[in-house]
Image (tube, rainbow, N blue to C red; front, side):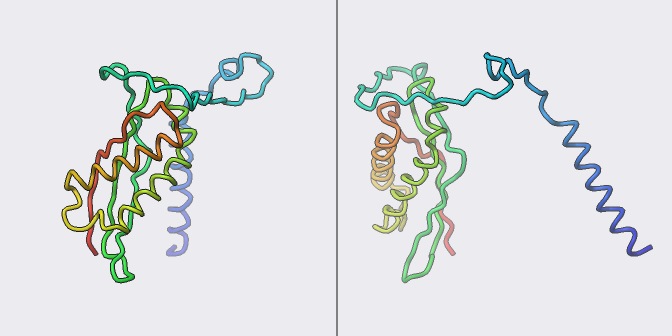
Length: 170
């Protein structure tokens, strides 16, 4: 009986998980909605790249801006004496021209890599030491992030917003 109970609990857990998955799955889409040609295959998603030589659209009010939150936080180690002395956790959103969210998300891996390099450089020059939330420190970091965001995304990005920042000393 002692060996049978754990096996029954595992089977019951798997059954409950499968049942919940079936009950909560999204409704199937009609293939004609996915691919208007109706040939049974999903049409490839193509994201049009904005013209890198184009001037950014003037953003005069919030109605002409779209804010895109990066999916995951950034974790930056702060190294002192060849040891990690702290971790800085940063959440970032981008201010872009409307209708560019798919373009930004399609390039998110490249953007994250570039952002992390800027943050590592900022940490290595002492940007996260002492009063790291000082406006001068954060302005320097924002400028660096905006510079690489403009390089990766082109003129569609108008600002980089640091929405959360926290430091955990070890």
